[in-house]
Amino acid sequence: MSGFNEIEKLIGEATEYDKKQAVELKKPKSWCKSVSAFANTSGGTLIFGIADDDSVVGLSDAEHDAEAVSNIMKNRLSPVPEFNLSFHVTENGKKLLLLHIFKGEETPYYYSADGTTEAYIRIGNESVPADSTDLKRLVLRGRNASYDSQNSPFEVADYSFTKLRERFKIWTGKSLEEKDFSSFGMIGTNGNLTNAGALLADESPIRWSRVFCTRWNGKTKSGGIVDALNHAEYSGSLISLLNDAESFIKSNSKTIWKKLPDSRLELPEYVHRSYFEALVNALIHRDYLINGSEVHIDIFDDRMEIYSPGGMPDGTLIQERNIKGVPSIRRNPVLADIFARLGYMERSGSGLSKIRDAYEFSANYSQDKAPVFYSDRSQFLVTLPNLNYLQELPADRPADPADRPADPADKNKMLNARQKEILSKMEYGVEYSAAELAEILGIKGSRTRELLNDLVDKGLLNKTAETNRRRYLKIPLDK
Image (cartoon, rainbow, N blue to C red; front, side, top):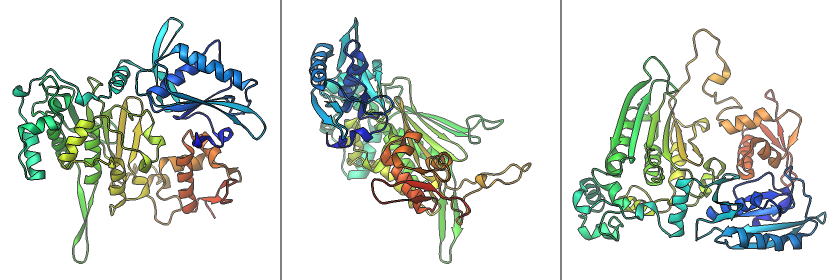
């Protein structure tokens, strides 16, 4: 509970907490669904005594409410998740009730009453009903299992693994032995392939394990008379999919070069290490329970988008997270372990940081070309900007500074979309706290402070103090 030392200063709701004005006794589903969602996802805290407008109203009889909460949970949650009840008294003497729900190990946790039985999961700051695919995931988690470790109906003798054997030999210098198939988790308890084994077979029988690649004409999927300049669909072993997707990107992107006194400097449109890591993540961490959805690679004039089915395993939204602080959560641990043995990835789970870091080390990088990560309930999307892309102006209108590549002397250079949004929301002469701007933008306070500090460094904002009373002031452009 140490993360809630200043409860009354928390704004809105987030992945890890919900606020309720009172303990609803007649309609407990209003908060019980959050209990189910927290237990089924990554845990969280319900704070009773704070209104929707974030005003602290307190509870008139917090002790009675605590007893009621405990009884309702025991009667309406199945199984009953592990929880902790505590009280918090504000500076104004208002008493709050904190209900902390621990991440459950016996998923799914259902709310059962009023003739309905339903499980919930946490997506961002919402508790939403679990759909059929979510329930499959929860059942697997309750069994301490994963999709890739499950037995498949496919017999080992019917499939070959030349791609796997070739890569293993190249990387380790050793030949892959038959016993390795079992130790790697590719053969199940029934003697058939596991799903991981089926995904690594040369002719993978899991038909939705495919990659669709398209080079579009322009910056949208309807960019001209000819919408697509190139298209390919790949199937087979995950190793083949990785190699084929990598080759498609190489053949549909360009590298320019700059002559130096003793050499030449190559300036690729896309950084190989970044898109390779993104491809590995898309194939290994995708949600294979979502049937009929494949990995997509879409290359436009100004960017590349790599889409994979399934959001963050813990229900958080990647765009609200600090990339360097995202822990390693492996949706498919068997596949991840095999790809680590093949030298394609690390077990430490540092792929997202590598994507961003590799871009930053590129000679033609600027901060407005930073990779962007997005996720929701059903997808994970990596957007890699074309480092060599310069927007061309139509001949029938004058140049607008906003359309040009950033001038190194310009104060507004190298701003990302969020920073531009911050500046557009702020009024001159008005001081804002980081918390106020976080609420306006609808993002986490930690991410907001990171963006604000960068704007201060660029000379676009003034910071009024170095204490908790810190405020930010927009600097006029002519200063």
